[in-house]
Image (cartoon, rainbow, N blue to C red):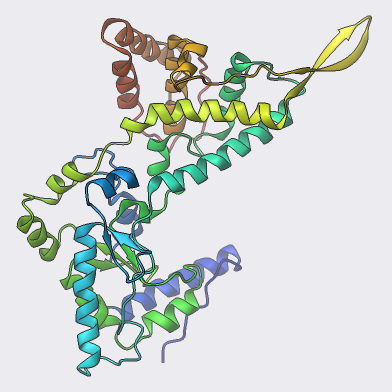
Length: 398
């Protein structure tokens, strides 16, 4: 008899390592050894990078709905998925139900009647939640540093923001492009996943008892593979679309797509189409949140050898028509430098001041001689070269 794993988030580091090693072994024994499961490394890039290495994400929820690219996956209309995922899941669900009613698997099995509990989640919801946390962190950061670096107006906020970015990166993400490849983004945002439960992924004992130890788990893995899904053995109620499966290839061919890459190019977009505007909105929201929560700033003064503080009102900055007014407020050259500073900090690029100055000078030249969007495109291209092996922070500033 195989003992159930007992791993959970309350264990020590060594205990977690031992239980994780044991869980890995048990999950292999329980599944079908002839069928590949998806690795955490593959899951991190599926639906985030295409086969050419370009970063991708789904369009906004509204765009998907407008273009009829979502299908209901439950009777209540609470779970939606991409057509390729919804169709494959519907066939898998019908197949498992048939196996149960025909007595080929137990009707009491957790796999007898499959229900889609989660599938597609709009990235704009996850990113908005993440952004709110980042804005809150900035407010706390500025309050802790207010005595030495008070923020009087938007110009001084830009300096404070630089300090906040220096302290926060590369450990957190600010822009959509960085977020969508980070640990903060929900894998469900890719649209290629179906979850059959909302159980706790850290509870190895429950995962084993309710899923891996189910006598029909191996059959489920086999049937899921036939209909184009790989099972995530670390979360065995999660199935992930396999772009290389025969089922997906047939589906694409029947829907006039030459390959999965062709499908991606027709449906997905690049984060850079949203990135810069969301960056401007983030700056504006950070500053207005600071002013709203703490409209007065306290400034240190020295007079007649006596130290004292006085409180004054921060500058109120209100957008009248369009978020581009942030660019007008800061200046085009400065906003280009600031955007480069943030994107390169997120990517942890190994730059000295001279190299940073050269890149931003080139970007500004693109702005002058081509257009503003070309400058941003140039920065995005430079920021693609992530360097997360570097442990020492570079000291460049704008």
